[in-house]
Length: 191
Image (cartoon, rainbow, N blue to C red; front, side, top):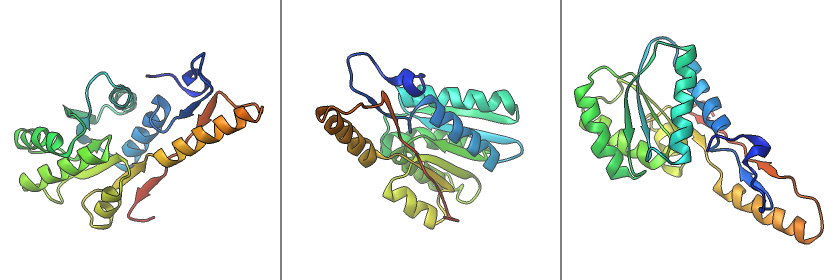
């Protein structure tokens, strides 16, 4: 879950295609979120089940930020099943119990969508920032409409394309790197 670079490759496989959901990618993204939200922050982190890679890497990235910024206070970590309804059902009571969060950080667009609904239901529109990872079509529209502040993209099409390309290179007798890194873009209202 927390390996980086070539260490993501496993013996017996051709190559590891990924990295946009790795330890390094989540750390870089969370550091950007921290820099984009200076000053004391009361943060609600919305993530998936505790033992999956994206949750593990999100938790580690939050800890990395907190080691540098003690004023980046997590008031709640909300564990969901990555669905819109689950995020909505679990974020709403957190907002009701904590009237002063300043930031929601979500590691997947469907959960972000549920969190936005919870913000509306709690009457908190416009009172906190929402930064997310996933970058779905919904997230891009939510940025345009001012519902969320940013989205870091996942690139499933590119992931599959590079995987098929690596297989074609191997079948042609060409060397294939053990690690084929994906990149993510950060989408904001400015871009």
